[in-house]
Image 1 (cartoon, each protein chain N blue to C red):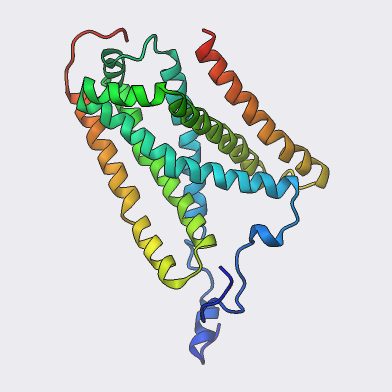
Image 2 (image 1 turned 90 degrees about the vertical axis):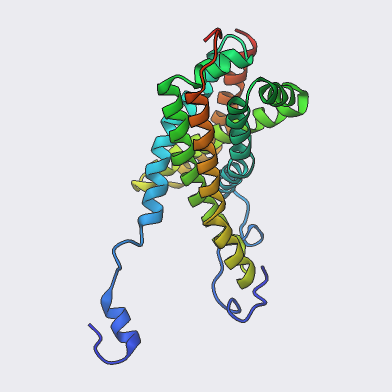
Length: 132
Length: 133
């Protein structure tokens, strides 16, 4: 444990215990995507027709709406973590790096909120008919 | 990119395509990143348009449907589905690598070739299931 210079103290402190947080969250959200996205693709593939009443009837079911909302949270967060790695690795100029990471802290959150509002509106709007 | 700012001069940078010798393992790693970024920057907007169209009513849905029913829309959807299956199989490979397995040179190379091949097969099966049902 360093007790003299500031760098010595920093070195002595060791791990901050959350250095692997980003890495772990990327894996945890990946497991969620492993369920959510195949569910989305198979569900859409199994619909008999792709007219509005069928799609709306499918999407407004409570379980469907829940899973669509989870995609907006889990998948979008996974994407946000992945884009962060991409930006950190390939955007080197200091100003651009700061601006891109600043946008990264706004755009994915805004996208998720917009998606959730749409899912809520679908789930809470009643329509008649539909083949699903 | 070339280390011209004072802060990045002389400091180690992440691997660039230019300093790696192309091989199966690095190619599948780059494909993983490209597929992931493709889904983030194209897939999420498409998904949000999908949700918006369904929330806004029949007219908005018809606009969405006509776009993705056209040839260019289908190219986007097929591309996104390929990106998903590529990212999925490559991601499963990463889970194996994360536990410390699969680093033997032959094994690693074999799976690096297998991942994109499996992804193409899964993409073909998915669209065959839709078009041939």
